[in-house]
Image 1: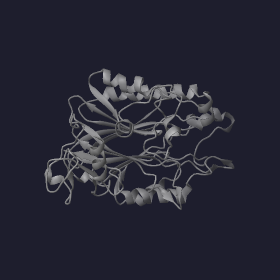
Image 2: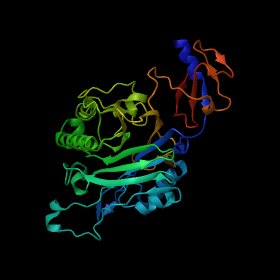
Image 3: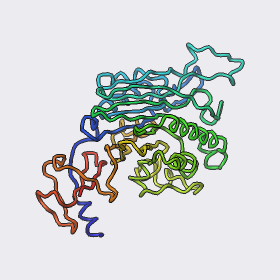
Image 4: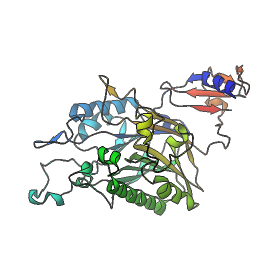
Length: 384
């Protein structure tokens, strides 16, 4: 077995980039990204002084335009919307912007600031032309915590957006994009973040109920900045297990499947995978997640690639924003129960190298094992 794994690791093929998969029958990719678009300051108060600002937001938009992901779902698109989206306009369709976080143009009762809430959610979806939206709607969270502390979650109208999309090959999917409550990192490490955790738990429950209320035969993909770790928040027992228990659908997490050996971190384990493995490693659990839900009587999809773009999302050696883009590639249909994906001969790249089950190279044969990777070395398929 060890010899076989060594041979399989050596069989690396170059087969194109992640971008533009929706144009190829059966595969598509989706990116989620917190664009860090809070204003650097409001009046004289510093809000996000280390954020990308206008110039950095232009660079983020150019990055997304260059990468050409099939779908991009963003969070914190507040004050630099034009700078962010203008570079993408030629290639993408986008939904409506909900507004900025600014004093100018807002009716504010300065004597009762505790009652003020900006009516923007910071959420934005973009998809390649050729993908057709049939429905888009926004739902605010019923529960938040933190007015003048704990990341000011009650100062904006956070929630989720739901998209019904038809891909070029005719596959219909539903995508949820969201931004859940954040917390103060010192409180989290000291165990004083119970109210933030309670708010997120109620948000996971609200999201779960909305998905179940509208569930049909279409695959559902859930993306966003969840500010959640499995070892800190009861995601599995309150979201995944409840949906699975209905018998109507099965929930999967792309990171759990492709980076963590199919195992969910134990709740209350006391170790955040992000801090233990390092946020810049794909093996480390991040606050962004991509989950997907296959209805029992639907066509089904499955994740075949998981990438945290720590190399491309840079300018002068620094991150363009404070979150790396997370990109997951999906394939239509359910995976082979053996864990080895089948593929038609016509889909193979010219020059493919095969290895039989004994680890011996076999030229020009369709029987054996091949590993394909794209140029960014993130997309891996084992083919029998």
